[in-house]
Amino acid sequence: MGAPHSPAAKKVGLRVAELRHRAGLSAKALAECADLDLTHLQRVERGQANPTLMTLVQIAIALEVDPGSLVEGIGADELQEGRLPYGHSQRTMRRRRSFAAEA
Image (cartoon, rainbow, N blue to C red; front, side, top):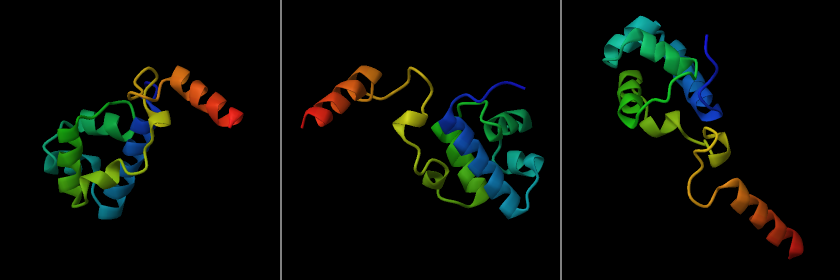
């Protein structure tokens, strides 16, 4: 088994697995409903895949939930190392903290 892709991928995967269990679906049934390969869905659930927006939408539709609920609350600090959005680099974060400390 591989390591999680990122903390965000792990969190999304746990949400997908939890919602699938609540819906009473097997991984195979969800994969079929979402038109995904079973192994890909399993990798998403384990946090070992970086699903595309379309994959997340397919999963959400199959689970009958809002796609946003799969990623709600995920912040920049949970992204893959080196993939922080503009304005969230380590250098920028250190600079922001030093300005805040001076104020």
